[in-house]
View (cartoon, rainbow over the protein chains, first blue to last red):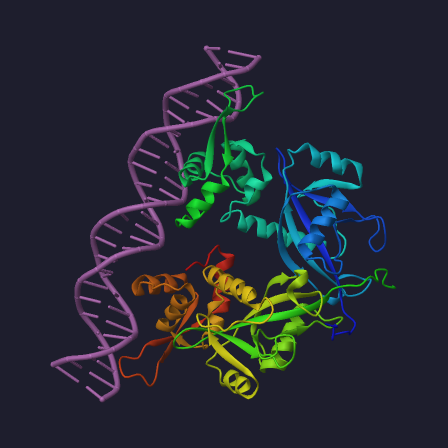
Length: 229
Length: 229
DNA sequence: GCAAAAGTGTTTCCCCTACACCCATGG
DNA sequence: CCATGGGTGTAGGGGAAACACTTTTGC
């Protein structure tokens, strides 16, 4: 069937806010632009959507091409389409956010090579386009969503001590949490698998390791559990 | 500055899930399609985004053109872009949802004329394209958001009795609420203005009318109130 | 006065909060 | 044996849930 609508149309792009967590704080992946507009300025990874490509597929492709990232947690955030947001013309961007495990070696290696770097979320440079606003919305979304969906685990290594999980929540929510209450709540929820392993290379008592069990989470969700932290 | 990117691009559209509330239940506005594809099938109001037009502006324009609606509460929902969703070619749609006051006369009048109608959310016909999935997401979003943002008032007349507000929440959340607890919670929140008026034309004790005070809500929000019902 | 819905008082119980304490391990 | 963080017990308060009751109005 021929396409009956053939007027001039805005261009379509995707942009990604990629979050990672290290020992200190929450990080975001930025790319330094090589070309105009905004040459030399830091920006979110992204690019144009091809025909017959879904926005999510375009986002994954760009993350792979620009940052060497694969198989990350990816979720659509919001579509930014104000006419003036790109000086080249009307470009509508479907923004996404991604969560990656910074503990994976691949992440560091891939980004060392190209002109990409991780920045603390409290210490971002001025960004190109409206990417500052996109980041703010992604940050707010992460803060909100981490409380009622178990997406935080995407930022942690597969096996982790409870202290690391608490640290994640303290960094993302930006407030201290009571150790006792945090542990009780998380454990009683029943979504963690207690492993027969402990940390290594610590100069004090080693903590037990846990693993997020997606299976248990789904089972409990069907039974009416509502995750909340 | 010339536009450097000139490859074939997907088309961009908007679709709107318009909610209204009457005495019985929650309603959605649908339009019967006149043309192929899906001629004769019910669909969400929507259309293509023009160049130099934001998606929100396109949504408002379409609501005005297709349903005579103006000045409604409108919020972006999600962008649907799977390659196969439109048989004419690759069309990416930025879905929105809108809340209108069905009690306004204008709404009924405008939709009587054209080929549009209100359907109960439990009683929808099969929809064109992927509009069924879009509706489901909008419905879920409304159910979730109404609990932590005061958007429900957009569905009510400006002045309303508390019973009507409770009815709104019961219909949207699809479960009964305790009258005493609901009233206490809402009133203690301090976001309602108590009017010196009561219902008319009822054959029993007339209820006092209230009005949502956006000013009070914003003041209290700054002071740390978190709306929750 | 009776039906129908508006509007109010109060108890119970659970969960969140806060805080203090003991335990295991490396140096 | 001491520093460091892992891991646990519990008292108290605030608010949600449940339920019964009184008040007002039209017919």
